[in-house]
Length: 325
Image 1 (cartoon, rainbow, N blue to C red):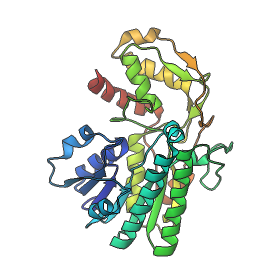
Image 2: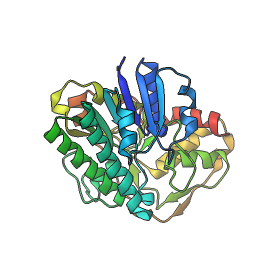
Image 3: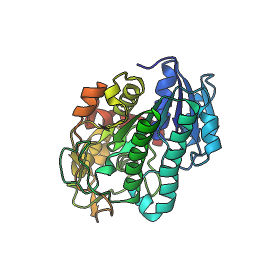
């Protein structure tokens, strides 16, 4: 548990950032949210705007002055701000670089200048690139397959450098396919789970990339919150300037994902039981299989994920049914 801390959440109006903010406020922390609404949504933070312990700054991590303003009085930074999506980075590699690398570097530098000691940041499983090894172990990575993956790996290098040179306690969390409440189902870069759920609700036929055997270690949002809290509060110096896989530790393919969503959603919408998917081409820049080893996070952080794919989907689908209809 984390209580009575002054915490900055960058990207706090996004999917993961808003869930972190909600959790932190419930546990009596003071939360500053920095977001520019490129991908974040004002609706995600509207429930917190009247909370005296919540402060919102509309700003950009590419702007050092915005970063300095957000960091004033902060003890811990949870850096979630980024321009996500492999396909988006392939279409616009320059923007991906500016936000993900220069924005991260700005935040690290401001944290150093303002005396913030703990800097927890969102890394990515895309860093494993073309590595065929399963499960994915933190020290064994391959060649990045997209500008997004390159940017997230460079972030890890910068964080490690700041830890070694300036004494900043950095901890990177390599997220594996996070899903859950508030994840945006709309747009060209929507993640697969909210996109499938919305299409089922709307009665649309779903297209699965490839033959459906591509697999991912889908990670429910509450597991991610747990990892961030542990990283923000750990006193284990062996964890500093390290990166950790944040996942459940079991992979499921897209066909299984489709069938599980269809089954769980049929509680509310019985006609989806008859739905059949379409199969399209594989997506450029995607890896074939992803499965995390979470032993390092268990050993050094005490990470113990509570939600597997099915448990998480039950909660997520309940939320989407209430909010998407």
